[in-house]
Length: 93
Image (cartoon, rainbow, N blue to C red):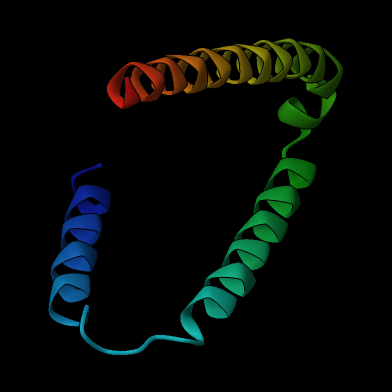
């Protein structure tokens, strides 16, 4: 865990010093790396018999959690949007 935090801090430091440089290809590189990581994760899950056999149970739990998270995020975003709009209307008066 300490290694992960150290790598993240190192990334922030490198990003801080490179903030003035144009990094146009970086978003595409990040997408490709994420796709590779997802593929490797899928391979690891498929190779692990315990996880693979538990997928039906894990899948139902994941769907419930994902649905609740999405609905909660949408409701809170909508509430925040309305609150900001009300502040703007009061500020304009």
